[in-house]
Image (tube, rainbow, N blue to C red; front, side, top):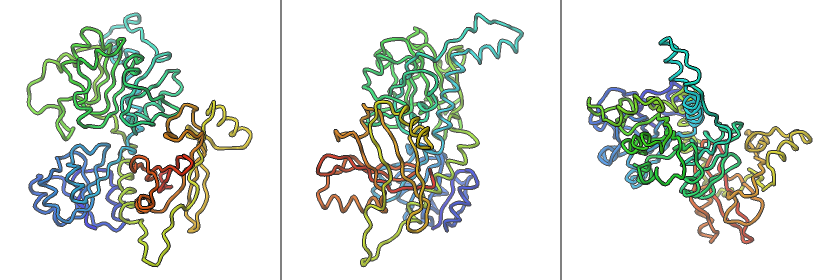
Length: 448
């Protein structure tokens, strides 16, 4: 498989793909038009954000099997047309989610404790203690919009700060032990600090405008490590001026170019931006929330792993081979009055090696490959088991999730939602005749 690398990334991405058997060419300087002239020679493309991959590009990529974006979102790719062309799209939100969570928390603590202002004052010979008296996170309600990889990572970082963490997401059942899912109206009623973790789409574009801000019941702080286009900057500045928004941590701005490498399309500075750069209650960073030494490695490895799963580790069945459906138990999930106390009990008395999610048990399969089974207690009010009313859910390991779902559809089995992909595998859900929700998992055990 020939793969063209269009943006520079960690070297292990290229070496990892080559170990899988790919032939990798690098082109970091040619124009989009020049690349279009040769793209028909490649089956794979790896890009970060150098340019849009549109219908014209895809029409010229006559042999393309996948496009991998070394980042969280796919907004620079015409997803609909790629699907029509049968091109598999790969992104890597798992690779920089921890970095984003840490960055969001770091900006918030810096703002609350006046660290930028105090540092600059001391460097100019000023020692102002009372003027830099900070505020604490403890007791605050943190509202998260968009509870996917990034939102979950931020919520995890907030554990230990004695805050209430709530989230709003268009998908149901995304809440977990770190965060309670609520309606948008409840989030706007309770929130002291709002953190955006939405992907770029029609719903999130210009989402935070004056009417949205005014729906909040009390003044609040805002963090944006998602996409700059989610906030209308003029409306944010108005809210900062009238103190409806008490402060802002902005890693992204609506003025950014598509590549995220430069800020403005022209040399003129908008008035709203001029306000932001002079406001003491605003922190700015140049789209680096997911930009760490570690995330560069993780992003590259995530792409390699996903290409491997999609194109190199699949087992093709001959017509005479028996199709394996369930290959083992992947997880035992159940509701508990106090999940943390229960995990502590199992750790103390039965020696479970517990973490935020429960306990992972490792074993070897028939081919002597390392495999895992997860044990996890959930809160009583979890919606993860919905629409089932039962207090438990089983996860079963499967060999080929797509093929299995095709068979189950033919057999009339009720399937809930769509396949979801993470760095540790693909997931789907079904209901059995007694209303038990079953999670099906095609695992990538190495990611755990």
